[in-house]
Length: 321
Image 1 (tube, rainbow, N blue to C red):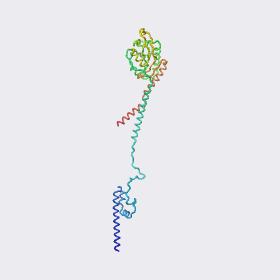
Image 2: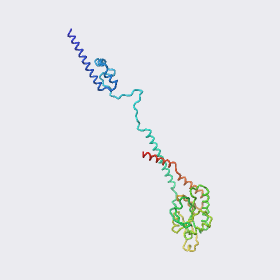
Image 3: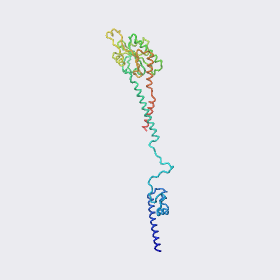
Image 4: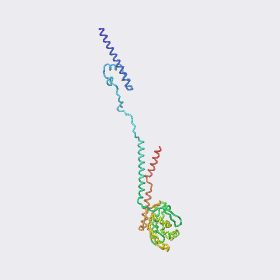
């Protein structure tokens, strides 16, 4: 009987010792691996009786097997709660700056395109005109620079011409009067110019007397020069004229063949159009006004030019900042 009691007590002591060892092992594992949260600490260090009973009996713990390590996967947010907010790489500010830059670049492209198209409009215009130096009927020296600032119409002839030149100068007077009355000529009034191709007889004094005794337009400006100067200006405007023989020059009585053309020059001194003898005064005036309107329209400031200036200012401020 006593031997049986000692064996029973010895078995109880060994069981208690084994439970204690397993309890201490479970506590150490929980300290090493459990998350640092209040729920985890309560789970690892629960009541001794419950943990001991679970370990001794081998029953599974409420969260699985008693010795299984906790999951290492990151905690998932609970249902109904928002996760961490992510910042997108493109914000509203950068998007707005990109849109502004694209608009400025497009405006610059359009402005440059319109300027290129305007410059291409002169393609096909005859290359006429150039530098010259002549003498006015007043004795003053005149160059092509003196014609800049206003519209001009040039006519080449000579004072001893019996019929063609007077008729053309009368037509030129009518054209100038029509242009003046139209009110469409901007800036200074149009300047009519008569250039002599007869330097031997048409001296400045002869030109002055000729313009005074005729009833041509009062603004008609007479120019002449030496043989070389007259030849240079005639060559620049593709004017043909014949030269008298030496014996004809001695007699002083001769006629000259020459081109019968009027040339329209813009305020920059550039050739615009020409009109032959077959054009009437109303036709010349109408065509000249059309050329003037076109010239003004081509040089009118485009809205895209203003946008380009505005865009350049914005791009400059962005670069400075």
